[in-house]
Image (cartoon, rainbow, N blue to C red):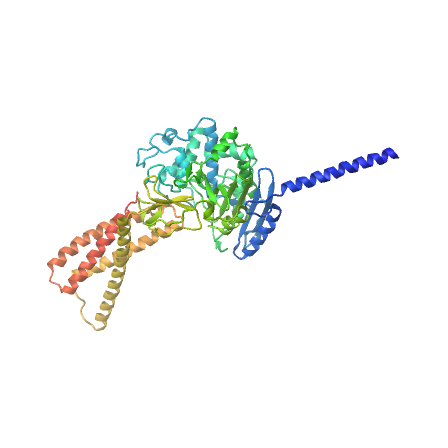
Length: 588
């Protein structure tokens, strides 16, 4: 009996120890996040945040974690509001540009194996003559592609498409819309989807696999990511391809975007689609110091080492393709947007905390930005830099088109102001006076260039208004003369001025059609003829200017009529000048 009691006391002691040990483990799992929120309170905080914004919420999935534990994961809203299909664990969302991180991990794997030098001229890895629009002798390196400072201008055509006809592979997609190089490599940060896709193509050339196959074999499979697809049409994972059909997409305020699935021909830049679990799996692997995606711990450390900084400061701007995103603490990662989805992957490597969020709302910021403050704290400029003097001058986003028919889309200027919600630094160390932001610079525009562009644009508006008013007046005159049964005025220059006015309106209509086509992601080949039409109309207008000038001098006309004709000629010259300056005639 005494032996039995002794055994019972020993068992109770062991049991009590185990309970205590378990409590220690629970206590250890609780931690204070960079925002100051306790980890065990986080889900309640996020639930409350979602309730505050439920009127504009479509669907959202979020997970917060450290390298060993999941601190919270939850699903909110609907993948299809109209059919009341809720967001669940098997729901899929598009990563958008967060896909680019797959490119940079692939590049670092090949670099680790000695197959790819980050500082080598990328042409050494490409087929002969692959790059045809380089403007500078300074070579483009993989680090330039990672930092988005290879110098490429923006590419608008065929970013999202509804059909893949005419595109057989990634190399073909790259060649169809190779951008001009408008900055010297290493001097200006201009976010480039094309540059990232080029890096993905280099992965293909070095590995001998398609980029999609490479990622499946070297990232998805090692991590057990069975619910992720990457190829242009998602055919590399038929389960994801079918699940994507269930997903409806919405505007930031929750309005339906009909038929929002698009193919991305430059797919390494933004096509990945997966469940939240797979998205989190990828992020958690990167947060782990012993990342299974690399053979050496040093490779992961190098991946997160800065490759570019905010101007002359030591504040990281880019870490081998991972952007530094400032909150209350420094995070690195990447955001993503497609035609109907948004995502963010953020890692606080110092505190060992990470977060991923996915939504089926385009250009969404409440969850992708504001909610992240519950985890990483609110951004305060003073935590990063003391300088607060707004630089003088006129600036435009470096991410723009400065050569080719989309040049007119670069008419975006910032004068004496900065985005105070973002970290910025004024810099001119590379020869360009610029304002450095995360994801891209704003470069200074010479005053002469600004005056020229604004002058051309304003005079073009005046030309259209003049033509419209003159046509209305002429129409009223014709009607009045008919009512009064008077003979119409027979004057060749009368018909000439009517033709000039109609041409002005036709060119405006063509410009509007171009904007609609670009906004609706129409394939380039369907509207390239519009730019050819601009060229033809410019030639016709130039001929009409010469004709009108000769006739106006040779005919006996009233002074008022002559002045009107000279205005007509002048405004046609303005329109021709705009077509030439904005490269609207370039249909090639």
